[in-house]
Length: 452
Ligand SMILES: Nc1ncnc2c1ncn2[C@@H]1O[C@H](COP(=O)(O)OP(=O)(O)OP(=O)(O)O)[C@@H](O)[C@H]1O
Ligand SMILES: [Mg+2]
Image (cartoon, rainbow, N blue to C red; front, top):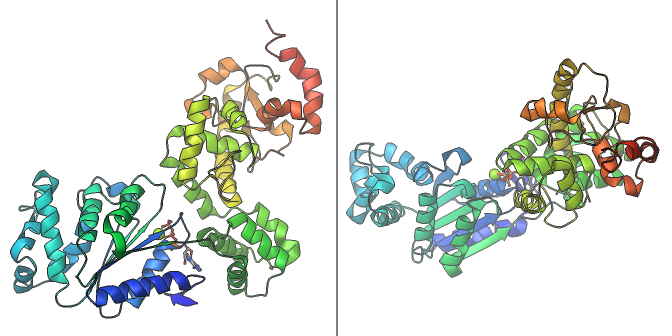
């Protein structure tokens, strides 16, 4: 086990051995590229931090892609190199920008001399390459680029340009990216363009043994096996989700006993909710609709059923499901299923808050008592702070179609979703006891065929 900062890095020995090989290659002047890939929270940044610690004797420069800065041309390259120039004397600067490296001034020079992508792109790429070569003359150079899936396209282009010319240079490039994000293809393309110099590692989730270790370390007690199994089940062994879960359990003072397993199923760490919501915000609105529908209806729901609840057409729903899988929220298969139960809980948690607000607003608007469950009315809110498919039906408020149309967009489906909709959609499957009673007494009266 390796300790990065204060965190023990579990089950990454093989990946770090690959990283050591890549660093050795660069030390001996052969150049190397290390690609670290994996879904959100699996530990890519942690591996890059460990690589940095392994890189004794290297000059290490770091940069990180940001989704807010993707439009900032050469932003990642500037993050790498500007601190070097800022800390250099005039003489050092002249030395670094000597020869073809002078062309890098179009990107790295003072604002007056920069022309970024407005100038000759090839000249800029070439100049930056020679700048890196000059930098590596004094000692080997390690360039660490995290979150490359969010790097600006010109920077990714330069990384690929450099990758194709690393042979014979004491330069190592270590790049971390999430596959499935918009820029990830370009980051992964490094693997294709850089050929034999590339070592790619794809990080796997932690095993139950590592989970048991983390549980014991955080809760300071040897855990019982069912407790570990529950942690593993809800987090899928994802280190970020597991860490958040364990922090929450520790704050709640939960003992890692078999009897506490049930508590784990009910916890939704606040940061997990935030992360789930942030991931949804980056996706088209149809994804939020589908994610909410599946959170309400439960894992294992058919696409058709979830689509019906959201009001999305079949093609749109299928595209949304694929986008949610690419963003590591859903599994990539059918029927629909969250990648980890904790993510579903996070979406559900956020949904409940929205529904609460809608209930207050609805109560003010709706002078009439609860409308009957008639065709054309939709469930818009639940009073429960954690509405689930088991929320009692009485907590569900329905809004007749005319009022629903008058409601602000945020109240309307797909924000609204509830067990009544679930019951209607699944009535033929008789999932709830009350459902069949409702079907016989109310649904028949208000079904589209009987109302005219
Ligand atoms: N192998 C590991 N063993 C124990 N804890 C780990 C391991 N890898 C990561 N962690 C912990 O999990 C959390 C998430 O890790 P990290 O930030 O490296 O993930 P990431 O893949 O970079 O996530 P993102 O895709 O969001 O950038 C951190 O708190 C980190 O300390
Ligand atoms: Mg990271």
